[in-house]
Amino acid sequence: MTEAPKIRILTAAALACGIAVAQPLNAGSAEWVSAADETSGSAVSFGAVSDSGTFPIASGVVLPERAGLPEGTAPTGRMISQTVPEDAEQGGDGGVKTGNKPSTFNYRINPYVRYNKLENGAEIMDYSVFLMAPVKWFGLFEGAFVYEGPVVRDQDLTDIGGGKDTGYADPVIRAPMIFKPFQTGKFNWIPVFIQEFTLPWGSGELGGDTLVMSPGGGFVISSNPRWFLAAIQFYDFDLSKSSGAADVNRVRMRYFVQYMVSPKHRIYVMPEFQASFDFEADEDSFWIAPEIGKVIKPIQGSSAGFVVYAKPGYGIANESNSFEREWSLEVGVRWMWDEFPLGG
Image (cartoon, rainbow, N blue to C red; front, side, top):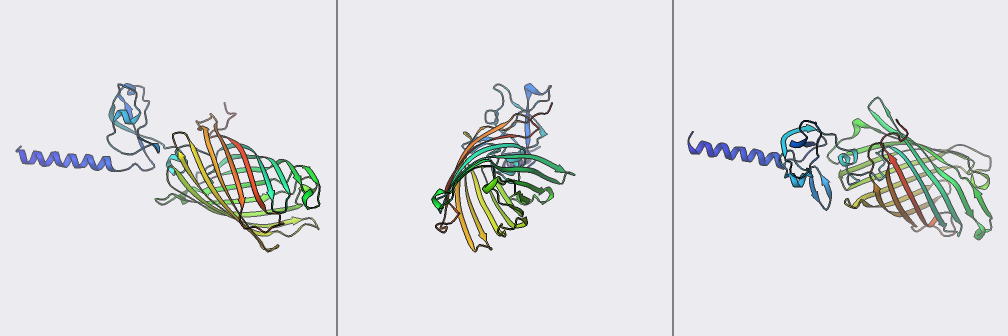
């Protein structure tokens, strides 16, 4: 073979390799098997290491020292299929779960304390718990059953001529769900459907005496491993109530963006905006709350993930002397499991 055809063949091969390396991985990523682990079949993931964390970058060559391979080993060039963890695939948590993403469901226990100072001077301290159990149907639907509510509520209405009460308040049961075939698009747009009920189980003056139904839904967008955006809306109306209880007819909206500030240290921020439009009382309410948290331990199968967070909140242009929040502070922890924690 003459020199010219050889040069053309080598040039074409080099361009082909360059194109292969430049192509990003899709959701079905891959991993190299190290030479040392060839017989056992175990694998070592590869990716790019940067300030943004370690993420898969290419379907071709990657330097061993950048791939996290054991020292002294090298890739064999054989590739096997890999299932990317959900939050690395969908984006938004920097490769770890924080418990905030509406389209992610796992076993979760989230005790928290929230102090509310109302515009009329009233004070409420809630000691609450959030419980979640995931469910799946026919391989098409994923969702969860959720219980959330104050186990103990301390309420002080002395500034508005009332008294002090301690007991338990009305809890909420919730059933969020996603339809997996709807997960589509380069931005990973995921519709979320939610059915919520507020149960009239509160004690004494702490109960609302009204069964409230709240159908809702929204979407989650996560095109990058470090952030996600969510928008959720509910319509609340009363199904049944006591004779003296007020009618319920309102719309609630929640919009929030989570950003993993430091994937290395697993620190995130999540500013949230809430709006409520009460058509019966003809009142509007607006509120912002920037949550700051840290993933102390990521989820690993049946091994629990652990998150701590703080969430201050501030009312925006709410009417004075109303029962709307002037400011609030929530502090809590989350334990999460991808697998049932009491399994064998």
